[in-house]
Length: 293
Length: 163
Image 1 (cartoon, helix red, strand yellow):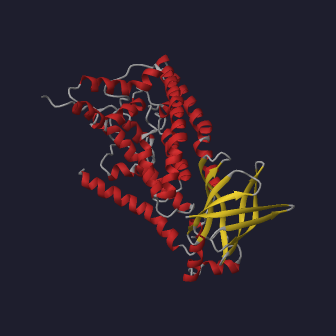
Image 2 (cartoon, helix red, strand yellow; image 1 turned 90 degrees about the vertical axis):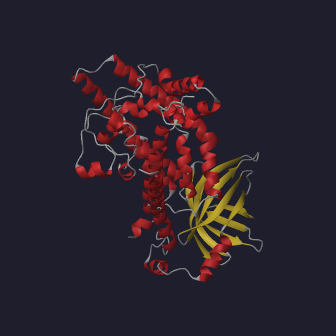
Image 3 (spheres, one colour; image 1 turned 120 degrees about the vertical axis):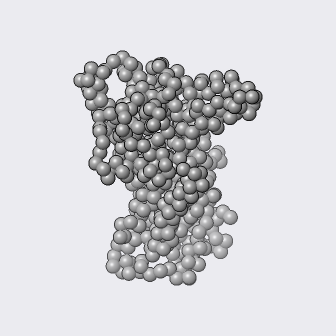
């Protein structure tokens, strides 16, 4: 059992996760997306809307990366290390057990971050971007909103406080995102039972992207669907999924796509009477309306 | 599902998942990596004695490191992970005094003999990385002087203890 506690260095971990997190874009995501385009063509579904939508997705990811980069340089980097050095439990060594626990915790944090983004107005204003595509393919995985990088900070910091190395956590968080990316496909049907029971799969994630009444606010998981099963938000893929949001965006303009959540939130707040009602839109669930006077 | 159920289940998940690696680190007899020969393997399964613990505690601290001939500085921290001591660079300070957070392992296993110690020191020079055997001596004030020699090149550093 010595291998469980055998320590390794951060550089080894970085090399391993780089291969998965960054490398997978080239050896998995892009080839798979090309396969999906071929599938659309074979099914005679390939049209300018799908291509324009995919292009808008790519534009949003670049905008997201820019925001993430600025945030990382100014805040996350400093904050994570300040917390790690000053208000954390004893630092954990880098070994297989620690990395495995970090993956579980980062995935659990992702679950709650994701759930909160769906259930409060300010969260939905940014996350609705990801859900606003009426299509479901690999490019949708990279369709991000302006503040999608901000919310995870609040859920990651407690993991740093538990003694997990911030760099390791960062690699693992990217790993959770990379795993999530490959779920955005209609090409893969249901997988064998045990896999569907434990892991998040394309089938489970199609449900998450559904605007069908029975699929709303379900399957928030990143890697492990067990979190949804344990916390009462699981739904099986049964009826045909209608992708998108309940109030469709009907646009492939990247700027409109990127900011539409905040535009809608702004209009809701503007039309509300009284400061309390206006602010309530920030923390109330999407669809909430102020009580009549 | 009730909010209280959500809270309890979530806390349990976090406590169990974070508790396992902490328990393992706490009860782990030793960092097995340096145990490359039979003799050290035998030593590594021995639980640490109180005396060993006391000696280790003396070294646990943050240190401001000045490098001979350089204006740049760094802050190192000697930490206990499992039962072994490691040293990390946690902050880099440029010539103008600007500070940048860092998290680089510079010594993966420090072998103590009371107030002296030795360890492989990971240094980087002109883009190349080297593992150099280094010797550390702690003075009465708790500061450390470090010496290493690598072929014809030798280096000296002063680690000033930060309280």
